[in-house]
Image: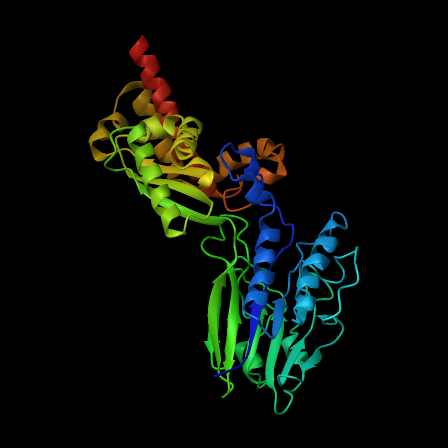
Length: 423
């Protein structure tokens, strides 16, 4: 028999853009434009449908300072629905919505608690015997251990710690409000509702220490279902957790083994087949995918010789076969020549000389650094957005320079071989 239930959500990032994807023909533009809002509406509707006793938001409700007041007005319109359903909402601010970052504010509806940033506070929901302890970020780069400032548990209550934290570090996330599991366990709470890490994770089961993940994936590093956790507490005070998806657009990665493909269009067929499969696996939810083509393949020279053309062939096939249900965000071609074409590498004349030169460059870290330095001036003129992320332009990294050589080699060889054939 359940005593009460609640929802634990985090990292909503209202009005965060899904970067530049609406530039691609065939992408689900409308879903992309309002994805974080639609996911938040799904959260509100779920809370009402499940008749939860309260809703927790563990930081980063916003994506940063509002561009205008529309973000706040939208939020109030949604929170009002929860007030009418008599569902209290308890929120801590995280690094993206810290007090120092938000310059525009609107008074929140009755029934919404935003915890202070200067000290930890406790809100009691006396009707159901719950005490929620929380503290907001005062500044984005909060490196203080906030967990240590949380109060002792309220006797006779189910105690919840609401905290935005990196714990002892989470890949891809800044080390904000760091703390240890011992810090959390020592408080004697029944449940820790964490935010900041966008990947859902049960860190500990007794007491429950859990990252709910974000409610809507925003880029390819946030793949798979995104949502919140519905928590049901039985009459013995034991919490049971149940993940509930909320996202309206889903991200995925597909890896294609091109070793059996004779040519580029054979790889196109493999890509569309895999996209269709991934779309089915995700219940038909609009899909944005990164495609990685791998393997020793006869199609290597064709693919790597004109990456832009084949990337758009893949996009074209996705539009043709799947309509607006799937979009290709990026294509990474990481194929290689099959062993049988090794004769090309040992050719005499310009082709053989080029191959030997590139082989020497790829295997010499000093040469890679030197080549990187010659590219720095060009890199300085590169738009900032092309330098960001895991695929950003970075001539200071020899691994990046070596990867560029691997990409350029097939294009150069193709041109040389074509030129030789025409003479």
